[in-house]
Length: 158
Image 1 (cartoon, rainbow, N blue to C red):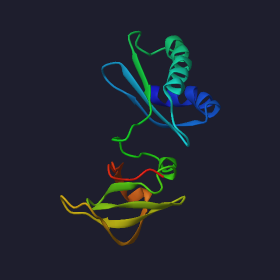
Image 2: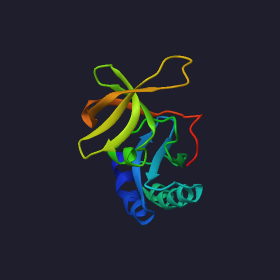
Image 3: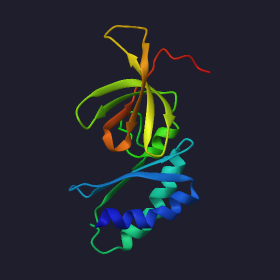
């Protein structure tokens, strides 16, 4: 499978760049999307270097369409968190988590462990400018269907 080959090819470059792979998508339109992240910021230069590195393999590999379109980027704020390592640099941020049983949990990420995350649940109502803590909840990664970092427009810079 092409996704697995891409993971094998790009892994050494990601280690060299101090980055990690979040997701690879091979779409029917011959588009290949590679989402990368890092413990620090991912720059456009990182994306360009990874893209150039991977293109060498894609151009020579059998089974890769000659008219492929490669996109390498960071996941961005609106994409769900996919792997546990992504949570670590988001400690202190507000998340909306949808569990596999359909429940929605909104709160501040306070702790990241090997098997689970801890969220300080916050109440929020439409139009409310203030949130109130509602206690702590631990969520195992296996129970999380989707977790998205929330924009905090009124948060003051530290």
